[in-house]
Image (cartoon, rainbow over all chains, first blue to last red):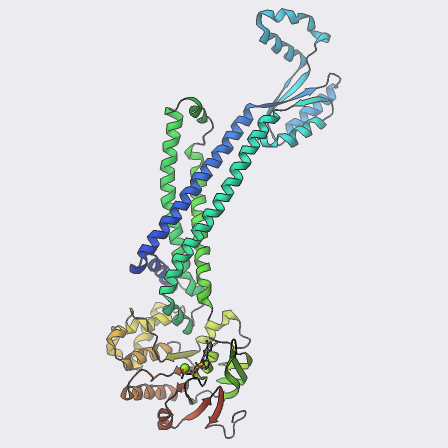
Length: 304
Length: 228
Ligand SMILES: Nc1ncnc2c1ncn2[C@@H]1O[C@H](COP(=O)(O)OP(=O)(O)OP(=O)(O)O)[C@@H](O)[C@H]1O
Ligand SMILES: [Mg+2]
């Protein structure tokens, strides 16, 4: 395509968006799409933070792999190697029988001497690996792997908590997806209806374009541009609004809040780690519905 | 060049607008297509533009077989011909100049070529002085000349006019017909559809008469194949 044609088509697209008769519709559809994007953004940041919360809680809980007293040194070394290579593990420490006893004596404080008879060969406490998983939702497969290692007595897992967290994560995920899908369709319908109105207003021109031999791509281009402009403007407004809101909330939680809410500050994702996800999400969403919505609204008029 | 071979057009559910029409129009001919309302004249044209597809038979226009043409080739086929309608079909908020430039712009012609060619064509149709006027500021005849100028932007091999004089008074229709004759004299095929017998008679050119979807008379039929 020639550059002058390209410029012309962009101009036509801009005209579709901002031209006298279309301004009101454009504002209306930017309004609706922005509202949808805001909802999407709120849901998505909520979901991301729930995720972060789940990970935070997960990291506080450890899986303990108790080593059988009968396990050989070679088996322990092998366990160590396997755990080192395990993808699901964030960190782990080995606690020997002696360390376990010492720890126990530490807890007992002044009564520690009661345990003095259990030293050496009499030590009843098992050696163990204390493991932090990267993601507690991976608890089940990970603990199965741990149990299967040679020389393991048994594996103690925070199963109940994991169940709750997994449920929380799944609920956010599916609810988020459902909301996303609905908003996605609402935005798509709104954009394609707005463009359908422009197309209708321009049906004469479209007819003439066809008679003089304009290609479908050429005819469609300005309407796709119009859709993309609606998507871009909406994405931009949403990004500005939600960035402001997020920063405000983050500052409030990390500095002002007390009690349980203050605890959230430990796992709320800082703005600097989330802004690019928002940006990419809003523009991706905006452009996609803008582009596809306009293409959909054109289909009927291209048949001739 | 236009070639219809046993062409039937049925509009669903069951209106047969053309029935087994075979006709050949050579490059450089000037042809009237004559017939009463509902005879099938516009259908005949729509098939040439591939606005409609033949139900049966084969239509070939300017070397494109319209029964087999791919969707994406249709625009390029249309650039080899120019069309004029009874209702002009100008864009009301564009000047005469812009209406013509529009047809070039939307077919990917660059601005330099547009600036060169539009004044030339406007001059050709005798509207050099009216380039800046909106359609509403022009007479019917002038509007039709703008439409004709627009049909000429791609330097077509074939100009098709559906009732080009239907909406303008007799004096002005003569102007349009003279222009079409002039265009024809440069070697462009011209097909004029009309229901005015007088018009066809006055210009004494090949006349194809249609009635009820069939060709009932073709003054060039003698010595030609396939027609009545
Ligand atoms: N899109 C359509 N759908 C159904 N029937 C149609 C359609 N277009 C035309 N017809 C019918 O086909 C027949 C031929 O119509 P056509 O428009 O070709 O006639 P015409 O000779 O151009 O008439 P006029 O002089 O009134 O323009 C008519 O009976 C008309 O009602
Ligand atoms: Mg007609």
